[in-house]
Image (tube, rainbow, N blue to C red; front, top):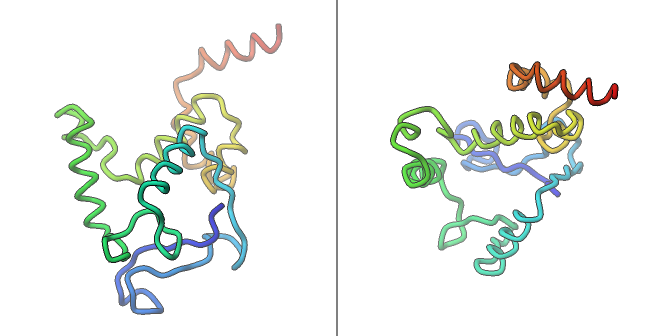
Length: 156
């Protein structure tokens, strides 16, 4: 369950003068929460991480040795190094998974292409169905034959 957001900005753009500021969830009332369903395999990984490393006082999973927040440049550095280990040189040179946020787009596209109903994908992504289809409709292009097969199967 997500209760708050903690986006990073520059100090001059936050009310507190800090780079991270606790805020209500986007497009939600102040105390409203959001359920984020995750696969059991990820639950196991997160539980193992928490068992080994614990969490920060405020519940964050990842923190510096002193309990502080990592900067976006630190995350970016680790992400770029990880891409070099996980991808081919041609993929590293491409825009594939250029930012961690790109994994969100990949997940939503995967779920839609796997046939997960749009309302469920929207719920998991924190979108309305309208926004989901406006942003991700293009990932469903080129599936005419597959879709026709599903319709034929449904018609018997």
